[in-house]
Amino acid sequence: MFALLTFPPVLATTNIIDIFERCDAVDQVLVVGLGVFSLIAWTIMFGKHFELKRLRLLNDSFEAHLRSKGTLLDLPESFRDKRAIPYADIFADAVEAYWRAAAIAKERGQDSGRARLEHAENAIQRAIARQTLRYESSMIFLASIVSGAPFIGLLGTVWGVMEAFSSVAMQQTAGIPQLAPGVSGAMLATIAGLIVAIPSVFGYNFLLGNTRRMTTELENFASSLADRIELESI
Picture 1 (cartoon, helix red, strand yellow):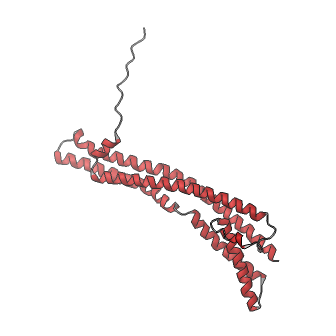
Picture 2 (tube, rainbow, N blue to C red):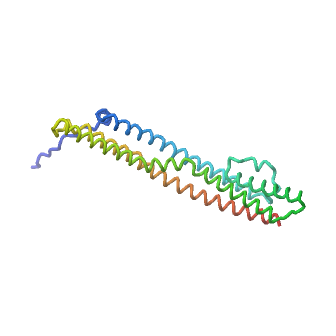
Picture 3 (cartoon, rainbow, N blue to C red):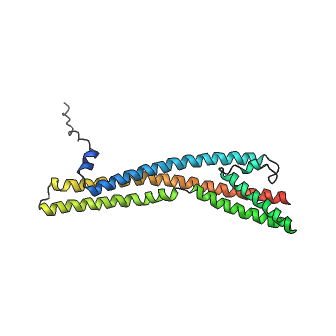
């Protein structure tokens, strides 16, 4: 004969809205602020992901198109009008610096292939720095959210606990009605801080890896571009 199995009653589902309404004004402001930060973080992560993906496709297409050309220095100006593409921006700066240095040297009667190459290489380095900043845009703000969200949640936790003990001290009783609002606010602030920080840290690390990889690809393209310009100028 099987024993009758009994199960504990199902616990009522926690109502976040009720807990939020029981919190004091400070914890409510902190939780709402963390919610705004969460929305901003997700917007940055998705926006940056699709931006990097689009730029990589544009870079690959431009590099393939450039590789199919026999010479670089004599390409039409249309190749230098695509500044929105990082590789094209580097190419345009390098070629324009090369011919600008050649024109000035010719006017002075001191035309030097080495000088033209140095100007082109300097322009390439400036373009790399500019495009690297473009890749890393918004990442600092995302890193600030990753670092700051847990501390904002901790501030709410400390404030809620302090409010709970203040209620106990004022009413000289340590019952659930006195402790519940402060403790609820403290726990809600902690949870909100973690909900913001945990996805943000994974997203930040993922985007940082993509940014570093694309920066390395940018430097490799610039190096091969400088080599081709040097060979053509001989």
